[in-house]
Image 1 (tube, rainbow, N blue to C red):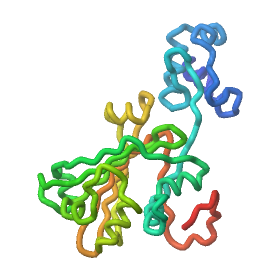
Image 2 (image 1 turned 135 degrees about the vertical axis):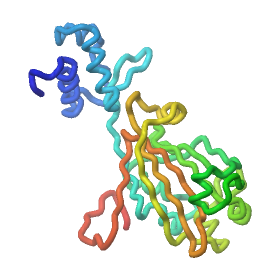
Image 3 (image 1 turned 180 degrees about the vertical axis):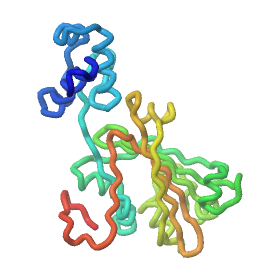
Length: 262
């Protein structure tokens, strides 16, 4: 970094390099503000600006009683083109998310499940081809990986499909929802994906444990049978912990890692 750059950026760059090279390891506590002030011979405000840069990047976190510590830099991959197709082949004991996490050597789990009825907003009505205000069934969960929240997911179903397929239950559907719908003749044969980014809403930041300045990736998938839309799934990914990958076409030459399947 150039000497002309502000002092706080140079300090942030130095600490960032120490984290990336392993000189400062995940879970390790950084020097105190006073120690950093003396080490770099700068003001307290300069130190705070430098730490703020790293906190916004998701590299460190500050907690009362522990001080400032290095965060584990965990990046998960969601294979959007094929992950959900595994639900159709999975046993009753697994699903796409858990299979994906297992392939990456992680432990996935669902928490905070909630089933509720909701009136269709204009956006939901347009995508699901129902009337605005029609009743929808929402099934929402928080996805955790190795004990940390990674994404929020909320799936919406037209009421007639929810009733026919047994989705009006406050618990998991045996075998998964995709298989339950297929068993009633509502087989998903196509989907439309939409991906956008934005800053999180306060409840999203709280549930995902996001640092100030960390965006979210908003992922909307609308699935279709040969006659109608079947569901809309809204997933809010923590922007500092997830990447979405699409694998399209003949990829026989692509190496597969950790048991990933195409």
